[in-house]
Length: 137
Length: 160
Image (cartoon, rainbow over the protein chains, first blue to last red):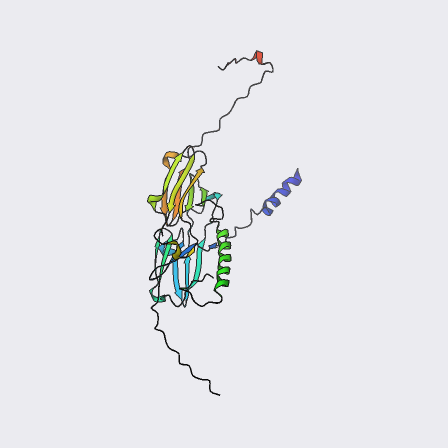
């Protein structure tokens, strides 16, 4: 009887009840995308459910296009998860743009969780003739 | 890292890159749980003090294409998404996003005030709020001593 009384508090502490909650790390997902060609360039569509205009970062640096969408939980923090089929997390994906994309004219819209990026074709530089000279010894 | 280019560039590593892309992509999608035999859309159910909240990720779906019905404890979600329907198939360089019509039927927790269901759709996320009904107090069921002989039963309720 007395054994039990002594053991009980130890049990609760080893069960992790007294351990401070460790903040769960943010999850990052690769969003599914479509890319299709138009006469003027490429169009990229990315599914970013839960991302709003002010939580989306889209940038072109050098030849890399990066999208980062931050997602807020759709429910208050005290909500208990009862059934789960998907996890809530941020979206991150980056792409290498070829030189044929006009980096300065890239534009985008965001509409009910779908990002649409226009990647217009750069105007082709005219073909340049390369002079061939015999190798001098 | 995904990579795409215009036209038919001379690109000796293209095939390898495509293979690696494809491999990574399938891993990503498996991890995210989309497709790969899973139902669309994926849903979550949360419980709060006075309501349940069902959420579903439906990016790119128009509100007018969404249909929610509730009958007999079953919530049916129905809709379609086809936001690039006029693009011919051969124009696609990549096609990873779900397209088409879908339907899901979900049985809801008990004690839901059906008449007070509300739904919102923001940034491609559907939220259905399911207010909890009043909890009926636990009812005591009296147990009386049984009589082994059915012919001496004091409550001769003959059915039929």
